[in-house]
Image 1 (cartoon, rainbow, N blue to C red):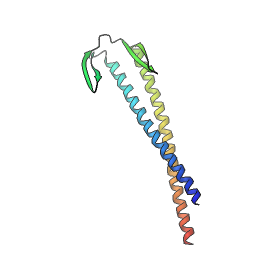
Image 2: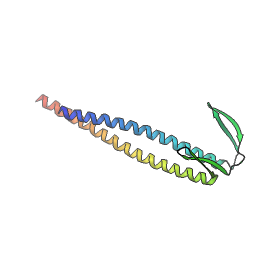
Image 3: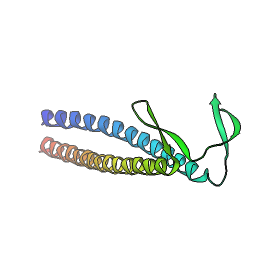
Image 4: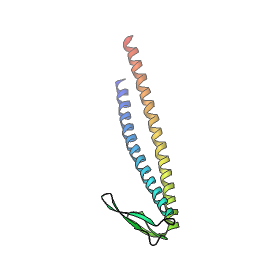
Length: 138
């Protein structure tokens, strides 16, 4: 009986650690997606208003204006930058947002499965404790 409880406790701890990691990943994915959505919104609004704030570091900005709004330099991963038309950049960003949506959905699904397993283990421990109490009362 004690071995079974130890096994369950070990699995419970492992699941908690996995849930913590997945929760952090989910948060990071959500932040990255929100950043992409902000980039998309900015690109879409460039045609309407060319005034922007330019980050210069330490939370400081310069006011500026975009002189060429039909070309954008986009980070495509691994430190590579590619010049694209604004419309191509928006399409690229939309695809990235969709990828984030899929990853968020997959991570959320896995997280729910692990949380359900955690609940099952808690119930199992409760059942083992009741059985142990009944055995010791007899």
